[in-house]
Length: 486
Ligand code: GLN
Image (cartoon, rainbow, N blue to C red):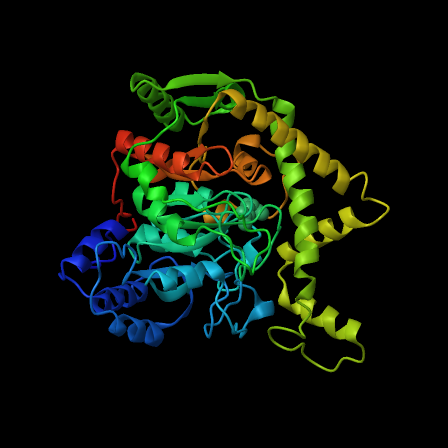
């Protein structure tokens, strides 16, 4: 157990302001905790640089909320001078020349980067088992997954290794592992946080996200990250806000919605009971709890639509990984560019990535485009239109963030489901519409955690966080740390 790193940002901030701890002590504590990681959560580290930065911090003022506090970043955030691989063989040894904007903004706020975290290869996946360093396990049970793709970030915050870790969320990659690791996982409105320097997976769905130990911390972090960036023309010009004020002033909206078909499809009794209990508590607190009949056909369309669109975008986004521009050279002699590139990609990507590129390439072929890619685009439109209709009369969608225990590593199958359960893919709604979405702890079943998710209208990040804070106080699980592995 570490001395400091299992605390929240807010507690550490208080200690720094009062001079009870120094940034250097925090960084040392974080480095030690990384040494004791039980889950295979880490890629490259930057201990020397972190120590150097910490030394420069001699005092912290009340308003310098994040200053002097260590953080981690998923390995798909470019970090200047620190190897960044996206947990893929194809990028081993690649050292970026610049920081992603999310990283540089945290540094600008005085935070200290200590290490990079493992992920599913190139962020494609939800198990945390496909990165080049192997499986990242669940802090609560080492025989189970912690979920992905932001597996290392979730496992690290859950173990009390750092109070903040950056992640990315294209389908549910922050919010699902948060549910499995008893952490708070936030995905901001699309365009609210610059994606500059974040390796693109599916641009129209990708969002910067992060893990913290409580909702108030998440609001402060968002305030540091939000705002337009001239390096990302898709980042919003909308004025950024002080998101923490929504939380501190308890500014919530009043109408909470849930989907009838979700409730009917839920099988796990413990999760269902905790969910119904929460909805009941919300109504007792004066919130209007409303059932919504979201069409099941659209819920069934979530997975195929996500797969076609994300694979298509990812095939195109990753075309630059050709073994020439970045990463290790292809082995052996090659006569042509095509031969070289084919070898580099054959050796550099795992089967899972290749499968996704085949789907992406196939759906983008001009002969298939209207049947596959364009059709998926139309399905996305319908999914989002229906969600916007929901938001015409309801302020929040509150759903369980996971519907089952995290899977046993030995029971994972690489076969793709032909009859996917919509419950497994429901958080992708947040990415299709670009909505702000938050996961926070709801309960524990047989020693394994599960979370609750809250989704709101675009750019209502403050209201989503404030509702998160409200639910957090109902669930009464602040400053949560994983227990020792069984
Ligand atoms: N599980 C989803 C996938 O396999 C989500 C990935 C993500 O959000 N990066 O693509």
